[in-house]
Image (cartoon, rainbow, N blue to C red; front, side, top):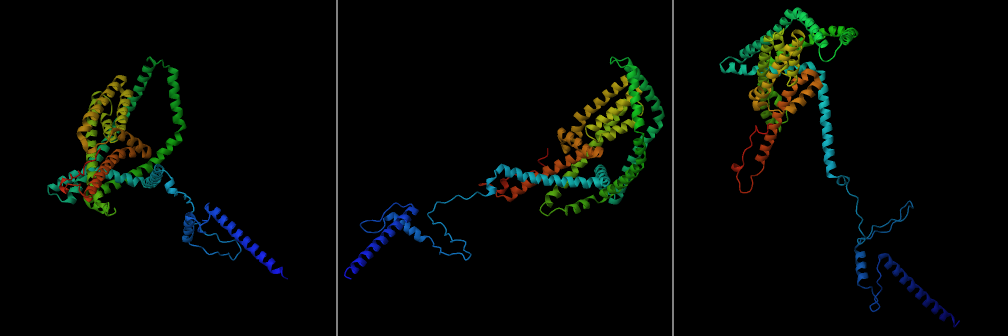
Length: 467
């Protein structure tokens, strides 16, 4: 029994040493996890300064209590300590896209919205094409006749009477011109057919004796092909003749709509414009109200200038082909006047028509002289009449004229070609005025520069910016 206490004492001391070794190994494992290679200070028995700093930092981190989920899915992992290395987060997708690509995308979807809006607008216009053409024609006629109404009003004539007199006089003159053309064609159609037949025979003889080495069999083959083409398309020609009744009805409807629209625009145009501006949002209303009169002045200048230029072309070309002995000189002059409203293309078509009539009726020499007269008058028109009469009121680049006429013709034929140039001219005026107006408004709202007063800031001309 005397040996039992000694054995128990040795067992207890051995257990104590094992506990100390376990504590040392646990401390070493904790230091390895923290990356701390320091050891306890032998003199003081405490951890060195780096270890104490790490311990203080770990103490400052909020401790999350250990919880075990009820569903047995594992222990809850606490958040990382404050001294853990930071991991860079993924950038925002908007910031990851380059700036140029974002700008292109923003502009792209806005252009798609505008293109869709224009497509819907064109579909609506094509559905009510007759009404749109009638109203546009009424605006052009109103721009031509409105100065006469204003002149009568200045002489004391009441507005209703001045409008009625001007509208009746204008429509009577246009009706007389149309009747005169039809009458001249009917009076000269028989004589013209004989002259055309003689001209074709003369042209045939000239081709046979020309240096082009054209044989009679080739000419007969061309004539046979033309007769076959006419015979093959007889059904289409007949259907076109039957559809002519519908065309006449639509034309009469359009003429009546044009007359009524012109009458009301001449009489009540100002109040119609004021009602239109009330449909615009209030913030944009001052700019639109200022751009409207300038656009109307541009349209008036374009219509009056085009009428004067077309009248001069018709008179001089008509006199030239009359003295050359070309039949139906007066109807051809009227056609030249009407086609002059189609810039560039109309002059070419009307001049070519006069040359063809001269060729088949009077021969090659007369056709060449007619071509010389047409080219001379058109050169005078392009270099003298257009710049002098239209001037800076309607300043549109020739490239814009060509592209607008081509686009208008492709979209809606002759009507689109006629409307294209005045539309471009009016749009140019409106855009220039709105750009100047917005710049002037920005100068009024911004403070004057340092050391300058409001008087020192030069005002912006509202009419500037026209190209």
